[in-house]
Length: 78
Image (cartoon, rainbow, N blue to C red):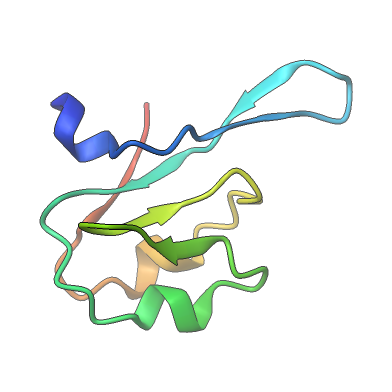
């Protein structure tokens, strides 16, 4: 996956044990901004930036966004 698809937002946060966690999902540049993922996110962790939506560092990795995306623009990070 190229750097463009990661956006400019850092998807890192501190875990319960103080270690660094990586959000497991990203929204790629293929996003059509339908906002279905924004509506389904239980903690409002998806926000609109200048050119696309991004998953911010409050993401709890529930995966609801990836399930509802109609064009598979949300990818799981290996």
